[in-house]
Length: 139
Image 1 (cartoon, rainbow, N blue to C red):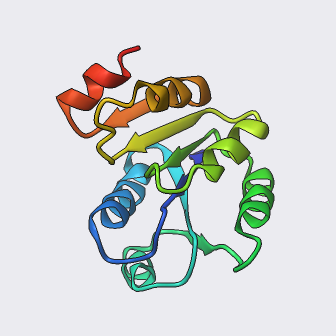
Image 2: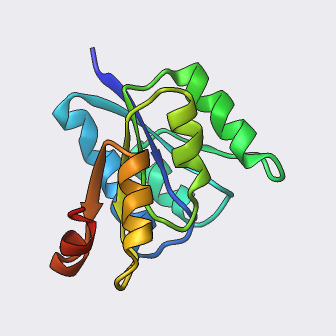
């Protein structure tokens, strides 16, 4: 039986981060996971997901955090993967539900150690895009 995981994309465009998380969702079944990708709104990424057979849900406008909460609580995943720092509320909602979170930090934080400490306090694992980010988040 495949283990359920929820992945959250901060947007539904055909751009770098959303395509990357979509490709991850596409490959996860080969590794024993059943992914559900959650999108904040309808967009062109949906065509790719349908073509690849990736399960996804689009959040209701105006009540995205509550809708996310309901979906995640109903799905009862093993963990939640959040794909960007752009939207932090999926991390907070997931932690309130007691779920482990993997946060993919794609943004350059410069030398903002404060953000690094918050990230460490909230999540179980962090994926970084550079050695500089690693040095900053190595609190």
